[in-house]
Length: 118
Length: 117
Image (tube, rainbow over all chains, first blue to last red):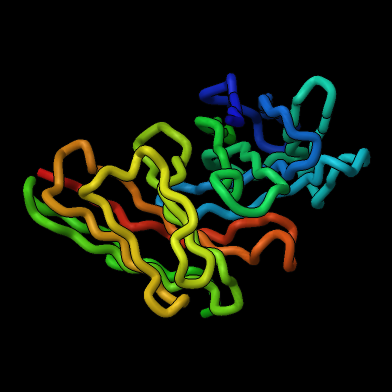
């Protein structure tokens, strides 16, 4: 079974600065998807960024980028120019590319609480 | 609104009572998932459907839990004889079947929060 580990329960950053959230995962598969989801307080979970394991190029979405190290099974999220609206729980998640069976859903880490200091 | 809709958003019940949650997924999606999230934890997979077929159930889903998706559209999650340990946020998500289309992304509803007294 796959596991996802987020070793930082909480991170704090000054507004406009850069912060990196860590995520490692364990899998025996070679093809899979990785995601960062954001969950603001009392709000629904929304996708921040995704990475397909077969792609070597790191994904980027505006101020959000990832550092995907497949051999190390590491998938960190960098948030540049942090804004107050970035404050939320951030979850790293893994999804197998194999359709069907117990491999279909997302496996989440425990999350990192990101605080933005004004 | 074409997002995932869940109701009720909040439910407070007494131990031993039955509760039912409903999820309306994005209409184009054929896969529907239920997750449970407790305070300070990431969501944990409970079960999922492809169309009306329930394809997988987690060990977390005890016999008191049952989920249905009768016509392949909305789904219900029923918890019978609730216990205090059932208190959690119940999240629904939907997606395309991976091999058919899509990027593997799940779209989540806002959740149904259950408090068992």
